[in-house]
Every structure is written in structure tokens, then in C-alpha cells.
Length: 88
Image (cartoon, rainbow, N blue to C red; front, top):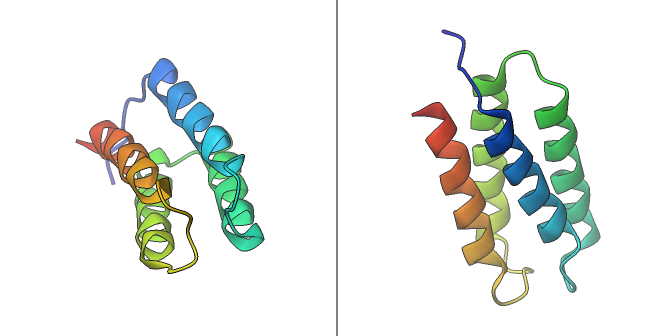
């Protein structure tokens, strides 16, 4: 895969959005743990494109979960859009 040039400001914004999402009340502990792993992956990554695709896949699974509080899915979709912009 070709290397992707990543704007560190964009990446910082995504990490901040993930951290905010992780602090939402009512989010199950297992989802918070997955989000924490996503942040670590983005901060310590050699192949950002591969990690972004993995995170997008994880978000698809999380968004389909019936245990999310109201209002969380749109936030997940928003972060997903930010991640997709990096890969495009």
C-alpha cells in the first residue's frame, strides 16, 4: 500500500473526538476499551491507512450495537467521515 500523508492537525482532531466519545455517559465498558485501543493505534502507527481501515471496520460493528446510548451513532459517523477524508 502507498504511504498516506497525514496532517497531524487532522489526526489530533480525530484523537480528541475519540477521547470525547470515550467519555460519553452510558457507553458500555467494552466499547470504551475499543475506542481506547483506536486512539493508541492512531498515535503509534506506521501504516496509518491500514489502521484507519481497521478502525472504520470496528466503528461499523460498534454502530450496529444495540447497546449504544442515543446520540452516539451520529458522533461515530462523524469521526468515521473524518477518518475517510484522510484516506481519500
